[in-house]
Image 1: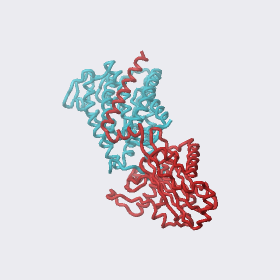
Image 2: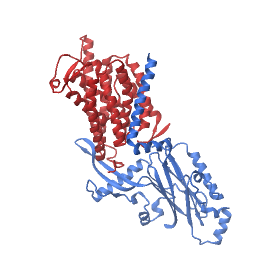
Image 3: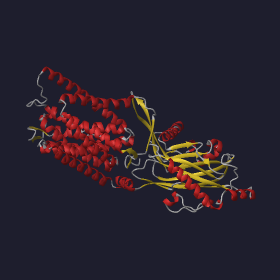
Length: 303
Length: 308
Protein backbone atom coordinates (compact mmCIF):
# COMPACT_ATOMS: atom_id res chain seq x y z
CA UNK A 1 0.00 0.00 0.00
CA UNK A 2 2.62 2.48 1.06
CA UNK A 3 5.84 3.05 -0.70
CA UNK A 4 8.76 1.89 1.37
CA UNK A 5 10.58 4.72 2.96
CA UNK A 6 14.19 5.15 3.78
CA UNK A 7 15.43 2.35 1.62
CA UNK A 8 17.49 4.65 -0.52
CA UNK A 9 20.69 3.97 1.38
CA UNK A 10 20.13 0.23 1.16
CA UNK A 11 19.68 0.64 -2.54
CA UNK A 12 22.84 2.63 -2.91
CA UNK A 13 24.68 0.01 -0.93
CA UNK A 14 23.24 -2.80 -3.00
CA UNK A 15 24.11 -1.05 -6.21
CA UNK A 16 27.65 -0.47 -5.03
CA UNK A 17 27.92 -4.07 -3.95
CA UNK A 18 26.69 -5.31 -7.28
CA UNK A 19 28.99 -3.06 -9.21
CA UNK A 20 31.84 -4.13 -7.01
CA UNK A 21 30.99 -7.77 -7.57
CA UNK A 22 30.76 -7.43 -11.28
CA UNK A 23 34.09 -5.68 -11.42
CA UNK A 24 35.86 -8.09 -9.12
CA UNK A 25 34.00 -11.23 -10.06
CA UNK A 26 33.96 -12.61 -6.53
CA UNK A 27 30.35 -13.70 -6.60
CA UNK A 28 29.57 -12.50 -3.10
CA UNK A 29 26.71 -10.03 -3.43
CA UNK A 30 24.17 -9.62 -0.71
CA UNK A 31 21.63 -11.30 -2.97
CA UNK A 32 23.69 -14.40 -3.34
CA UNK A 33 24.66 -14.60 0.29
CA UNK A 34 21.00 -14.73 1.20
CA UNK A 35 20.23 -18.00 -0.53
CA UNK A 36 21.60 -20.88 -2.51
CA UNK A 37 24.82 -19.82 -4.21
CA UNK A 38 24.12 -18.56 -7.69
CA UNK A 39 26.43 -19.56 -10.50
CA UNK A 40 29.48 -17.35 -10.48
CA UNK A 41 28.78 -14.23 -12.51
CA UNK A 42 29.66 -15.04 -16.08
CA UNK A 43 30.96 -11.53 -16.50
CA UNK A 44 34.11 -12.44 -14.62
CA UNK A 45 36.21 -12.53 -17.74
CA UNK A 46 35.58 -8.81 -18.11
CA UNK A 47 37.08 -8.34 -14.74
CA UNK A 48 40.06 -5.99 -14.89
CA UNK A 49 37.52 -3.81 -16.65
CA UNK A 50 38.09 -0.84 -18.89
CA UNK A 51 41.51 -1.47 -20.27
CA UNK A 52 41.01 -5.13 -21.14
CA UNK A 53 37.65 -4.31 -22.63
CA UNK A 54 39.05 -1.62 -24.80
CA UNK A 55 41.65 -3.99 -26.09
CA UNK A 56 38.97 -6.58 -26.70
CA UNK A 57 36.97 -4.11 -28.64
CA UNK A 58 39.89 -3.27 -30.78
CA UNK A 59 40.73 -6.89 -31.29
CA UNK A 60 37.29 -8.19 -32.11
CA UNK A 61 35.15 -5.32 -33.33
CA UNK A 62 32.46 -7.60 -34.74
CA UNK A 63 32.01 -9.81 -31.66
CA UNK A 64 28.37 -10.43 -30.76
CA UNK A 65 27.04 -8.73 -27.65
CA UNK A 66 25.27 -10.72 -25.00
CA UNK A 67 23.52 -9.69 -21.83
CA UNK A 68 23.59 -11.10 -18.31
CA UNK A 69 21.63 -9.94 -15.32
CA UNK A 70 20.74 -10.65 -11.74
CA UNK A 71 18.54 -9.22 -9.02
CA UNK A 72 19.62 -7.78 -5.69
CA UNK A 73 17.59 -10.36 -3.77
CA UNK A 74 16.60 -13.62 -5.37
CA UNK A 75 14.46 -14.56 -2.46
CA UNK A 76 12.47 -12.08 -0.45
CA UNK A 77 10.80 -12.96 2.83
CA UNK A 78 7.29 -11.70 3.47
CA UNK A 79 7.25 -11.42 7.25
CA UNK A 80 4.88 -9.63 9.57
CA UNK A 81 6.77 -6.41 9.04
CA UNK A 82 6.69 -6.68 5.24
CA UNK A 83 5.80 -3.34 3.75
CA UNK A 84 6.91 -3.75 0.16
CA UNK A 85 10.46 -3.85 -1.12
CA UNK A 86 12.59 -2.32 -3.82
CA UNK A 87 14.57 -4.74 -5.94
CA UNK A 88 17.64 -3.74 -7.88
CA UNK A 89 18.09 -5.44 -11.21
CA UNK A 90 21.58 -5.13 -12.60
CA UNK A 91 23.21 -6.54 -15.65
CA UNK A 92 26.10 -6.22 -18.01
CA UNK A 93 26.60 -6.30 -21.76
CA UNK A 94 29.38 -8.62 -22.87
CA UNK A 95 31.49 -7.25 -25.73
CA UNK A 96 29.95 -3.86 -25.29
CA UNK A 97 30.61 -1.62 -28.30
CA UNK A 98 29.20 1.36 -26.47
CA UNK A 99 31.58 4.33 -26.29
CA UNK A 100 30.12 5.67 -23.02
CA UNK A 101 27.25 5.23 -20.59
CA UNK A 102 25.45 8.27 -21.95
CA UNK A 103 25.72 7.38 -25.61
CA UNK A 104 22.39 5.56 -25.80
CA UNK A 105 24.02 2.94 -27.99
CA UNK A 106 22.03 0.05 -26.49
CA UNK A 107 18.46 -0.19 -25.33
CA UNK A 108 17.41 -2.42 -22.47
CA UNK A 109 13.91 -3.55 -21.56
CA UNK A 110 13.30 -5.40 -18.31
CA UNK A 111 10.03 -7.19 -17.62
CA UNK A 112 9.21 -8.56 -14.17
CA UNK A 113 6.16 -10.77 -14.09
CA UNK A 114 4.41 -12.45 -11.15
CA UNK A 115 2.50 -15.71 -11.28
CA UNK A 116 -0.41 -15.72 -13.71
CA UNK A 117 -3.71 -16.37 -12.01
CA UNK A 118 -7.45 -16.07 -12.19
CA UNK A 119 -9.23 -12.83 -11.49
CA UNK A 120 -12.85 -11.70 -11.41
CA UNK A 121 -13.66 -8.28 -12.87
CA UNK A 122 -16.97 -6.76 -11.91
CA UNK A 123 -18.79 -3.84 -13.33
CA UNK A 124 -21.16 -1.68 -11.33
CA UNK A 125 -24.18 -0.04 -12.80
CA UNK A 126 -26.92 2.13 -11.47
CA UNK A 127 -30.07 0.23 -10.64
CA UNK A 128 -32.92 2.39 -9.39
CA UNK A 129 -30.47 4.98 -8.05
CA UNK A 130 -28.18 2.47 -6.34
CA UNK A 131 -24.78 1.35 -7.55
CA UNK A 132 -24.18 -2.37 -7.47
CA UNK A 133 -22.19 -4.98 -9.34
CA UNK A 134 -24.35 -6.16 -12.19
CA UNK A 135 -21.97 -7.94 -14.52
CA UNK A 136 -18.77 -9.88 -14.07
CA UNK A 137 -16.18 -11.72 -16.09
CA UNK A 138 -13.48 -14.17 -15.08
CA UNK A 139 -10.05 -13.91 -16.66
CA UNK A 140 -7.22 -16.41 -16.59
CA UNK A 141 -3.46 -15.85 -16.96
CA UNK A 142 -3.60 -12.47 -15.28
CA UNK A 143 -0.10 -11.80 -13.88
CA UNK A 144 -0.33 -10.94 -10.21
CA UNK A 145 2.39 -8.37 -10.83
CA UNK A 146 3.86 -6.87 -13.98
CA UNK A 147 6.57 -4.25 -14.25
CA UNK A 148 8.41 -2.89 -17.27
CA UNK A 149 11.55 -0.86 -16.96
CA UNK A 150 13.41 0.41 -19.99
CA UNK A 151 16.01 2.89 -21.19
CA UNK A 152 13.47 4.61 -23.47
CA UNK A 153 9.74 4.23 -24.22
CA UNK A 154 9.28 0.60 -25.24
CA UNK A 155 7.58 1.43 -28.55
CA UNK A 156 10.79 3.18 -29.62
CA UNK A 157 12.91 0.21 -28.59
CA UNK A 158 11.11 -2.76 -30.07
CA UNK A 159 8.64 -3.33 -32.86
CA UNK A 160 4.97 -3.95 -32.23
CA UNK A 161 5.36 -7.56 -33.42
CA UNK A 162 8.20 -8.22 -31.04
CA UNK A 163 6.34 -6.78 -28.07
CA UNK A 164 3.22 -8.74 -28.96
CA UNK A 165 5.06 -12.04 -29.30
CA UNK A 166 7.09 -11.55 -26.12
CA UNK A 167 4.26 -10.10 -24.06
CA UNK A 168 5.98 -6.79 -23.42
CA UNK A 169 3.61 -3.94 -22.60
CA UNK A 170 0.24 -3.84 -20.90
CA UNK A 171 -1.70 -4.21 -24.15
CA UNK A 172 0.16 -7.42 -24.94
CA UNK A 173 -0.64 -9.23 -21.73
CA UNK A 174 -2.21 -12.59 -22.48
CA UNK A 175 -5.30 -12.11 -20.36
CA UNK A 176 -7.85 -14.65 -21.52
CA UNK A 177 -11.51 -14.97 -20.53
CA UNK A 178 -11.98 -18.21 -18.56
CA UNK A 179 -14.13 -21.01 -19.90
CA UNK A 180 -17.71 -21.31 -18.75
CA UNK A 181 -18.45 -17.64 -18.10
CA UNK A 182 -21.72 -16.97 -16.36
CA UNK A 183 -22.41 -14.10 -18.76
CA UNK A 184 -21.73 -14.12 -22.48
CA UNK A 185 -18.97 -11.69 -23.44
CA UNK A 186 -18.74 -9.69 -26.63
CA UNK A 187 -15.33 -8.70 -28.03
CA UNK A 188 -15.86 -5.13 -26.86
CA UNK A 189 -16.73 -6.37 -23.37
CA UNK A 190 -13.53 -8.41 -23.24
CA UNK A 191 -11.45 -5.40 -24.32
CA UNK A 192 -13.14 -3.15 -21.80
CA UNK A 193 -12.64 -5.65 -18.99
CA UNK A 194 -8.99 -6.09 -19.95
CA UNK A 195 -8.43 -2.35 -19.86
CA UNK A 196 -10.12 -2.24 -16.47
CA UNK A 197 -7.84 -4.98 -15.11
CA UNK A 198 -4.74 -3.09 -16.23
CA UNK A 199 -6.04 0.23 -14.94
CA UNK A 200 -7.01 -1.15 -11.53
CA UNK A 201 -3.77 -3.11 -11.19
CA UNK A 202 -1.84 0.08 -12.02
CA UNK A 203 -3.82 1.91 -9.36
CA UNK A 204 -2.86 -0.77 -6.83
CA UNK A 205 0.78 -0.30 -7.81
CA UNK A 206 0.98 -3.86 -9.13
CA UNK A 207 1.37 -2.99 -12.81
CA UNK A 208 4.17 -0.55 -13.38
CA UNK A 209 5.72 0.94 -16.47
CA UNK A 210 8.74 3.17 -16.09
CA UNK A 211 10.18 4.30 -19.38
CA UNK A 212 13.52 5.74 -18.37
CA UNK A 213 14.33 3.71 -15.30
CA UNK A 214 17.08 1.55 -16.78
CA UNK A 215 20.35 3.42 -16.70
CA UNK A 216 23.79 2.48 -17.95
CA UNK A 217 26.45 3.11 -15.37
CA UNK A 218 29.48 2.26 -17.47
CA UNK A 219 30.02 1.10 -20.96
CA UNK A 220 28.60 -2.31 -20.18
CA UNK A 221 26.90 -2.12 -16.80
CA UNK A 222 23.27 -1.11 -16.31
CA UNK A 223 20.81 -1.14 -13.47
CA UNK A 224 17.17 -0.51 -12.65
CA UNK A 225 15.02 -0.62 -9.55
CA UNK A 226 11.52 -1.96 -9.34
CA UNK A 227 9.10 -1.74 -6.44
CA UNK A 228 7.24 -4.76 -5.11
CA UNK A 229 4.50 -3.10 -3.05
CA UNK A 230 3.13 -4.47 0.22
CA UNK A 231 0.01 -5.82 -1.47
CA UNK A 232 1.97 -8.00 -3.89
CA UNK A 233 1.07 -11.68 -4.16
CA UNK A 234 3.76 -14.08 -2.99
CA UNK A 235 5.26 -16.54 -5.43
CA UNK A 236 7.96 -16.74 -8.08
CA UNK A 237 8.65 -13.75 -10.31
CA UNK A 238 10.22 -14.06 -13.72
CA UNK A 239 12.57 -11.30 -14.75
CA UNK A 240 13.35 -11.03 -18.46
CA UNK A 241 16.03 -8.71 -19.75
CA UNK A 242 16.15 -7.78 -23.46
CA UNK A 243 19.13 -6.07 -25.04
CA UNK A 244 18.35 -4.06 -28.16
CA UNK A 245 20.21 -1.99 -30.69
CA UNK A 246 18.24 -0.10 -33.32
CA UNK A 247 15.08 -2.21 -32.92
CA UNK A 248 17.08 -5.41 -33.21
CA UNK A 249 17.18 -7.93 -30.37
CA UNK A 250 20.82 -8.68 -29.61
CA UNK A 251 20.45 -10.86 -26.58
CA UNK A 252 18.08 -11.80 -23.81
CA UNK A 253 18.44 -13.25 -20.35
CA UNK A 254 16.05 -14.30 -17.65
CA UNK A 255 16.34 -14.71 -13.91
CA UNK A 256 13.87 -15.66 -11.20
CA UNK A 257 13.17 -14.11 -7.89
CA UNK A 258 10.95 -15.55 -5.25
CA UNK A 259 8.70 -13.96 -2.68
CA UNK A 260 7.90 -16.25 0.22
CA UNK A 261 5.95 -15.92 3.42
CA UNK A 262 8.18 -16.48 6.40
CA UNK A 263 8.10 -16.51 10.17
CA UNK A 264 4.91 -15.79 12.08
CA UNK A 265 3.28 -14.49 8.94
CA UNK A 266 3.78 -17.83 7.16
CA UNK A 267 2.53 -19.86 10.12
CA UNK A 268 -0.61 -17.80 10.64
CA UNK A 269 -1.51 -17.77 6.96
CA UNK A 270 -0.90 -21.49 6.63
CA UNK A 271 -2.87 -22.13 9.79
CA UNK A 272 -5.84 -19.99 8.70
CA UNK A 273 -6.16 -21.61 5.29
CA UNK A 274 -4.83 -25.10 6.05
CA UNK A 275 -6.65 -25.82 9.32
CA UNK A 276 -9.56 -23.38 9.25
CA UNK A 277 -11.58 -25.08 11.99
CA UNK A 278 -8.65 -25.24 14.40
CA UNK A 279 -7.76 -21.66 13.51
CA UNK A 280 -11.33 -20.60 14.31
CA UNK A 281 -11.16 -22.39 17.66
CA UNK A 282 -7.88 -20.68 18.45
CA UNK A 283 -9.33 -17.27 17.58
CA UNK A 284 -12.38 -17.86 19.79
CA UNK A 285 -10.12 -19.09 22.62
CA UNK A 286 -8.04 -15.92 22.33
CA UNK A 287 -11.20 -13.80 22.36
CA UNK A 288 -12.61 -15.55 25.45
CA UNK A 289 -9.26 -15.32 27.22
CA UNK A 290 -9.02 -11.61 26.38
CA UNK A 291 -12.50 -11.07 27.79
CA UNK A 292 -11.71 -13.00 30.98
CA UNK A 293 -8.43 -11.19 31.50
CA UNK A 294 -10.08 -7.82 30.95
CA UNK A 295 -12.85 -8.61 33.40
CA UNK A 296 -10.50 -9.78 36.18
CA UNK A 297 -8.00 -6.97 35.68
CA UNK A 298 -10.60 -4.23 35.67
CA UNK A 299 -12.65 -5.72 38.49
CA UNK A 300 -9.59 -5.52 40.70
CA UNK A 301 -8.80 -1.94 39.78
CA UNK A 302 -12.45 -0.84 40.03
CA UNK A 303 -12.92 -2.06 43.61
CA UNK B 1 4.61 0.60 12.99
CA UNK B 2 3.47 -1.65 10.18
CA UNK B 3 2.20 -5.19 10.49
CA UNK B 4 1.23 -7.47 7.64
CA UNK B 5 -2.21 -8.94 8.30
CA UNK B 6 -2.10 -12.64 7.41
CA UNK B 7 -5.70 -13.08 6.24
CA UNK B 8 -6.65 -9.60 5.09
CA UNK B 9 -3.32 -9.75 3.18
CA UNK B 10 -2.43 -6.15 3.57
CA UNK B 11 0.05 -4.12 5.51
CA UNK B 12 -1.63 -2.24 8.31
CA UNK B 13 -0.53 0.35 10.79
CA UNK B 14 -0.73 -1.25 14.24
CA UNK B 15 -1.34 2.06 16.01
CA UNK B 16 -4.22 2.99 13.70
CA UNK B 17 -6.11 -0.20 14.48
CA UNK B 18 -5.29 -0.05 18.19
CA UNK B 19 -6.65 3.48 18.23
CA UNK B 20 -9.70 2.41 16.26
CA UNK B 21 -10.39 -0.35 18.77
CA UNK B 22 -9.88 2.12 21.59
CA UNK B 23 -12.20 4.75 20.13
CA UNK B 24 -15.00 2.29 19.45
CA UNK B 25 -14.40 0.67 22.84
CA UNK B 26 -14.74 4.11 24.44
CA UNK B 27 -18.05 4.71 22.68
CA UNK B 28 -19.35 1.26 23.55
CA UNK B 29 -18.39 1.77 27.18
CA UNK B 30 -19.99 5.21 27.12
CA UNK B 31 -23.25 4.07 25.55
CA UNK B 32 -23.33 0.51 26.85
CA UNK B 33 -23.51 -0.98 23.38
CA UNK B 34 -21.42 -3.69 21.77
CA UNK B 35 -19.85 -1.43 19.18
CA UNK B 36 -19.89 -3.92 16.32
CA UNK B 37 -22.14 -1.69 14.26
CA UNK B 38 -19.48 1.04 14.53
CA UNK B 39 -16.36 -1.13 14.27
CA UNK B 40 -17.33 -3.11 11.19
CA UNK B 41 -18.12 0.03 9.14
CA UNK B 42 -14.88 1.66 10.31
CA UNK B 43 -12.91 -1.40 9.22
CA UNK B 44 -14.66 -1.42 5.86
CA UNK B 45 -14.06 2.30 5.34
CA UNK B 46 -10.38 1.85 6.19
CA UNK B 47 -9.87 -0.64 3.39
CA UNK B 48 -10.28 -4.03 5.08
CA UNK B 49 -12.26 -6.30 2.72
CA UNK B 50 -15.88 -6.27 3.99
CA UNK B 51 -16.03 -10.03 4.46
CA UNK B 52 -12.83 -9.99 6.56
CA UNK B 53 -14.14 -7.01 8.54
CA UNK B 54 -17.34 -8.90 9.38
CA UNK B 55 -15.58 -12.17 10.30
CA UNK B 56 -12.89 -10.49 12.38
CA UNK B 57 -15.27 -8.21 14.20
CA UNK B 58 -17.30 -11.17 15.44
CA UNK B 59 -14.16 -12.36 17.25
CA UNK B 60 -13.74 -8.98 18.88
CA UNK B 61 -17.38 -8.89 19.99
CA UNK B 62 -16.90 -12.31 21.59
CA UNK B 63 -14.07 -10.86 23.67
CA UNK B 64 -15.90 -7.72 24.76
CA UNK B 65 -19.17 -9.53 25.49
CA UNK B 66 -17.42 -12.17 27.63
CA UNK B 67 -16.36 -9.54 30.15
CA UNK B 68 -19.74 -7.83 29.94
CA UNK B 69 -21.66 -11.06 30.43
CA UNK B 70 -19.48 -12.04 33.39
CA UNK B 71 -20.21 -8.74 35.11
CA UNK B 72 -23.95 -9.25 34.56
CA UNK B 73 -23.76 -12.86 35.74
CA UNK B 74 -22.17 -11.75 39.02
CA UNK B 75 -25.14 -9.45 39.53
CA UNK B 76 -27.48 -12.38 38.69
CA UNK B 77 -28.92 -10.43 35.76
CA UNK B 78 -29.06 -13.30 33.27
CA UNK B 79 -32.22 -15.26 32.54
CA UNK B 80 -30.59 -18.49 31.42
CA UNK B 81 -33.85 -20.03 30.19
CA UNK B 82 -34.59 -17.03 27.99
CA UNK B 83 -30.92 -16.83 26.99
CA UNK B 84 -30.89 -20.48 25.89
CA UNK B 85 -33.97 -20.04 23.70
CA UNK B 86 -32.44 -16.91 22.15
CA UNK B 87 -29.18 -18.78 21.71
CA UNK B 88 -30.78 -21.78 19.98
CA UNK B 89 -32.34 -19.42 17.46
CA UNK B 90 -29.12 -17.45 17.23
CA UNK B 91 -26.95 -20.43 16.33
CA UNK B 92 -29.37 -21.45 13.59
CA UNK B 93 -29.41 -17.88 12.26
CA UNK B 94 -25.63 -17.70 12.35
CA UNK B 95 -25.24 -20.92 10.35
CA UNK B 96 -27.65 -19.60 7.73
CA UNK B 97 -25.98 -16.17 7.74
CA UNK B 98 -22.46 -17.51 7.24
CA UNK B 99 -23.65 -19.68 4.35
CA UNK B 100 -25.38 -16.64 2.87
CA UNK B 101 -22.17 -14.57 3.15
CA UNK B 102 -20.34 -17.30 1.22
CA UNK B 103 -22.80 -17.36 -1.65
CA UNK B 104 -23.17 -13.58 -1.81
CA UNK B 105 -19.40 -13.28 -2.06
CA UNK B 106 -19.31 -15.73 -4.94
CA UNK B 107 -21.94 -13.61 -6.68
CA UNK B 108 -19.94 -10.45 -6.03
CA UNK B 109 -22.77 -8.64 -4.27
CA UNK B 110 -21.77 -9.14 -0.63
CA UNK B 111 -20.40 -5.59 -0.30
CA UNK B 112 -23.62 -4.18 -1.69
CA UNK B 113 -25.74 -6.37 0.57
CA UNK B 114 -23.80 -5.31 3.69
CA UNK B 115 -24.26 -1.65 2.77
CA UNK B 116 -27.99 -2.14 2.25
CA UNK B 117 -28.30 -3.91 5.62
CA UNK B 118 -26.42 -1.14 7.39
CA UNK B 119 -28.43 1.63 5.74
CA UNK B 120 -31.71 -0.07 6.60
CA UNK B 121 -31.02 -1.06 10.18
CA UNK B 122 -29.00 1.94 11.22
CA UNK B 123 -31.49 4.27 9.53
CA UNK B 124 -34.53 2.77 11.23
CA UNK B 125 -32.95 2.22 14.65
CA UNK B 126 -31.24 5.59 14.63
CA UNK B 127 -34.44 7.42 13.71
CA UNK B 128 -36.48 5.57 16.34
CA UNK B 129 -33.90 6.22 19.04
CA UNK B 130 -33.64 9.86 18.09
CA UNK B 131 -37.38 10.35 18.33
CA UNK B 132 -37.69 8.37 21.54
CA UNK B 133 -34.82 10.15 23.29
CA UNK B 134 -36.03 13.56 22.12
CA UNK B 135 -39.49 12.76 23.54
CA UNK B 136 -38.02 11.56 26.82
CA UNK B 137 -35.91 14.67 27.14
CA UNK B 138 -38.93 16.86 26.47
CA UNK B 139 -41.05 14.96 29.00
CA UNK B 140 -38.26 15.03 31.55
CA UNK B 141 -38.23 18.79 31.26
CA UNK B 142 -41.97 18.90 31.86
CA UNK B 143 -41.56 16.54 34.80
CA UNK B 144 -43.80 13.64 33.71
CA UNK B 145 -42.39 10.27 34.80
CA UNK B 146 -41.77 7.74 32.03
CA UNK B 147 -41.52 3.99 32.03
CA UNK B 148 -40.79 1.79 29.06
CA UNK B 149 -42.30 -1.32 30.53
CA UNK B 150 -45.98 -1.70 31.19
CA UNK B 151 -46.18 -5.00 33.07
CA UNK B 152 -49.30 -7.07 32.69
CA UNK B 153 -49.94 -6.08 29.10
CA UNK B 154 -49.93 -8.97 26.66
CA UNK B 155 -49.47 -9.20 22.92
CA UNK B 156 -50.88 -11.88 20.67
CA UNK B 157 -47.29 -13.18 20.27
CA UNK B 158 -47.27 -14.19 23.91
CA UNK B 159 -50.21 -16.52 23.36
CA UNK B 160 -48.47 -18.76 20.79
CA UNK B 161 -48.04 -22.46 21.70
CA UNK B 162 -44.97 -23.94 23.45
CA UNK B 163 -45.39 -21.82 26.53
CA UNK B 164 -42.40 -21.80 28.84
CA UNK B 165 -41.86 -20.31 32.27
CA UNK B 166 -38.99 -17.80 32.25
CA UNK B 167 -38.31 -17.41 35.94
CA UNK B 168 -35.85 -14.53 36.10
CA UNK B 169 -37.96 -12.53 33.65
CA UNK B 170 -41.16 -13.40 35.56
CA UNK B 171 -42.82 -14.38 32.28
CA UNK B 172 -44.90 -17.34 31.14
CA UNK B 173 -44.95 -16.97 27.36
CA UNK B 174 -44.46 -18.96 24.18
CA UNK B 175 -40.85 -19.88 23.35
CA UNK B 176 -41.43 -19.12 19.67
CA UNK B 177 -41.02 -15.30 19.78
CA UNK B 178 -37.65 -15.35 21.61
CA UNK B 179 -36.49 -18.15 19.30
CA UNK B 180 -37.38 -16.08 16.23
CA UNK B 181 -35.74 -12.98 17.69
CA UNK B 182 -32.60 -15.02 18.39
CA UNK B 183 -32.66 -16.41 14.85
CA UNK B 184 -32.91 -12.97 13.33
CA UNK B 185 -30.12 -11.62 15.53
CA UNK B 186 -27.87 -14.57 14.65
CA UNK B 187 -28.46 -13.90 10.97
CA UNK B 188 -27.55 -10.23 11.39
CA UNK B 189 -24.51 -11.12 13.47
CA UNK B 190 -23.14 -13.27 10.67
CA UNK B 191 -23.90 -10.85 7.84
CA UNK B 192 -23.20 -7.48 9.45
CA UNK B 193 -20.45 -8.34 11.93
CA UNK B 194 -22.43 -7.08 14.90
CA UNK B 195 -23.53 -8.57 18.21
CA UNK B 196 -27.11 -7.62 17.52
CA UNK B 197 -27.85 -6.11 20.92
CA UNK B 198 -29.34 -3.07 19.20
CA UNK B 199 -32.11 -5.30 17.83
CA UNK B 200 -32.37 -7.82 20.64
CA UNK B 201 -32.64 -5.36 23.54
CA UNK B 202 -35.54 -3.30 22.12
CA UNK B 203 -37.24 -6.50 20.93
CA UNK B 204 -37.02 -8.04 24.39
CA UNK B 205 -38.26 -4.91 26.10
CA UNK B 206 -41.06 -3.98 23.76
CA UNK B 207 -42.17 -7.32 22.29
CA UNK B 208 -41.46 -9.81 25.07
CA UNK B 209 -41.86 -7.43 28.01
CA UNK B 210 -38.72 -8.74 29.68
CA UNK B 211 -37.82 -6.65 32.76
CA UNK B 212 -35.08 -4.16 31.89
CA UNK B 213 -32.70 -5.37 34.61
CA UNK B 214 -32.28 -8.81 32.99
CA UNK B 215 -32.44 -7.64 29.36
CA UNK B 216 -28.80 -6.57 29.00
CA UNK B 217 -27.32 -9.59 30.78
CA UNK B 218 -29.47 -12.05 28.88
CA UNK B 219 -28.69 -10.51 25.51
CA UNK B 220 -24.95 -10.47 26.35
CA UNK B 221 -25.20 -14.17 27.27
CA UNK B 222 -26.65 -14.90 23.83
CA UNK B 223 -24.11 -12.65 22.06
CA UNK B 224 -21.10 -14.40 23.63
CA UNK B 225 -22.08 -17.76 22.22
CA UNK B 226 -23.54 -16.62 18.93
CA UNK B 227 -20.52 -14.48 18.01
CA UNK B 228 -18.16 -17.28 19.11
CA UNK B 229 -20.04 -19.67 16.82
CA UNK B 230 -20.06 -17.07 14.04
CA UNK B 231 -16.30 -16.57 14.37
CA UNK B 232 -15.79 -20.33 14.13
CA UNK B 233 -18.02 -20.59 11.07
CA UNK B 234 -16.51 -17.60 9.27
CA UNK B 235 -13.02 -18.97 9.93
CA UNK B 236 -13.80 -22.50 8.82
CA UNK B 237 -16.08 -21.81 5.87
CA UNK B 238 -15.09 -18.44 4.47
CA UNK B 239 -11.53 -18.00 5.86
CA UNK B 240 -12.31 -14.40 6.64
CA UNK B 241 -11.11 -14.07 10.25
CA UNK B 242 -7.83 -12.23 10.72
CA UNK B 243 -6.49 -13.13 14.14
CA UNK B 244 -3.84 -10.39 14.16
CA UNK B 245 -6.41 -7.72 13.39
CA UNK B 246 -8.79 -9.21 15.98
CA UNK B 247 -6.14 -9.07 18.71
CA UNK B 248 -5.34 -5.42 17.89
CA UNK B 249 -9.01 -4.49 18.09
CA UNK B 250 -9.51 -6.44 21.33
CA UNK B 251 -6.54 -4.78 22.99
CA UNK B 252 -7.69 -1.30 22.01
CA UNK B 253 -11.32 -2.06 22.74
CA UNK B 254 -10.84 -3.36 26.29
CA UNK B 255 -9.00 -0.24 27.40
CA UNK B 256 -11.34 2.12 25.58
CA UNK B 257 -14.43 0.50 27.07
CA UNK B 258 -13.23 1.05 30.64
CA UNK B 259 -12.56 4.74 30.02
CA UNK B 260 -15.87 5.10 28.21
CA UNK B 261 -17.83 3.44 31.02
CA UNK B 262 -16.31 5.86 33.53
CA UNK B 263 -17.11 8.83 31.31
CA UNK B 264 -20.66 7.58 30.75
CA UNK B 265 -21.53 7.92 34.43
CA UNK B 266 -21.36 11.69 34.13
CA UNK B 267 -23.96 11.95 31.37
CA UNK B 268 -27.74 11.50 31.58
CA UNK B 269 -29.24 8.38 29.99
CA UNK B 270 -31.47 10.24 27.52
CA UNK B 271 -28.62 12.52 26.48
CA UNK B 272 -26.50 9.44 25.84
CA UNK B 273 -29.27 7.87 23.79
CA UNK B 274 -29.64 11.02 21.74
CA UNK B 275 -25.91 11.14 20.98
CA UNK B 276 -25.87 7.45 20.14
CA UNK B 277 -28.83 7.89 17.80
CA UNK B 278 -27.03 10.69 15.98
CA UNK B 279 -23.94 8.51 15.64
CA UNK B 280 -25.96 5.56 14.34
CA UNK B 281 -27.65 7.77 11.75
CA UNK B 282 -24.32 9.19 10.61
CA UNK B 283 -22.85 5.74 9.97
CA UNK B 284 -26.04 4.79 8.10
CA UNK B 285 -25.80 7.92 5.96
CA UNK B 286 -22.19 7.16 5.14
CA UNK B 287 -23.24 3.78 3.75
CA UNK B 288 -26.15 5.34 1.89
CA UNK B 289 -23.77 7.83 0.29
CA UNK B 290 -21.57 4.97 -0.87
CA UNK B 291 -24.58 3.36 -2.54
CA UNK B 292 -25.93 6.38 -4.35
CA UNK B 293 -22.84 8.40 -5.27
CA UNK B 294 -21.25 7.68 -8.63
CA UNK B 295 -18.24 5.42 -8.05
CA UNK B 296 -14.84 6.68 -9.23
CA UNK B 297 -14.42 3.46 -11.16
CA UNK B 298 -17.37 1.26 -12.08
CA UNK B 299 -15.00 -1.69 -12.40
CA UNK B 300 -13.45 -3.65 -9.58
CA UNK B 301 -11.19 -6.67 -9.50
CA UNK B 302 -10.93 -9.45 -6.95
CA UNK B 303 -9.53 -12.91 -6.59
CA UNK B 304 -12.20 -15.53 -7.22
CA UNK B 305 -13.87 -16.81 -4.05
CA UNK B 306 -14.14 -20.44 -3.12
CA UNK B 307 -12.29 -21.68 -6.19
CA UNK B 308 -15.20 -20.63 -8.40
